[in-house]
Image 1 (cartoon, rainbow, N blue to C red):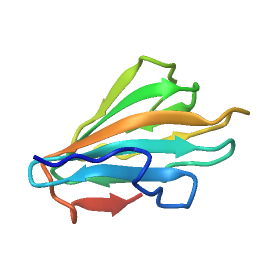
Image 2 (cartoon, rainbow, N blue to C red):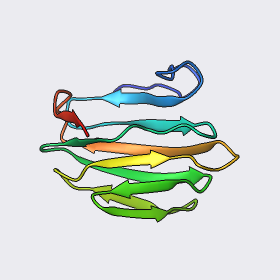
Image 3 (spheres, rainbow, N blue to C red):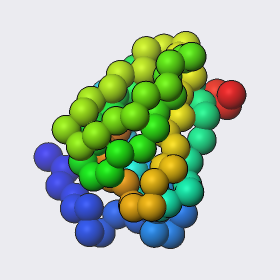
Length: 111
């Protein structure tokens, strides 16, 4: 068993960006916080499926060529080969959960 807490793990950018809670051996997941004006960064995966579950805020998400506004309780899946980005174009912080499977840490490519 492994146990952790959101309160002890660190964000990639200090107080925003992704925060991994578990990495491997089968999947990786965590939370993302984006402050107003921040973006996740356009990227894709060759084999990994990435799911997003939105907790707070209403950012724009782009998956492939489709751009949509999402709301709390919405879930979005990016299939392998679908470039994706999340853009916080609002005046409030957003928070979401991400899940990537299978665990292939070198599978990411930039847009």
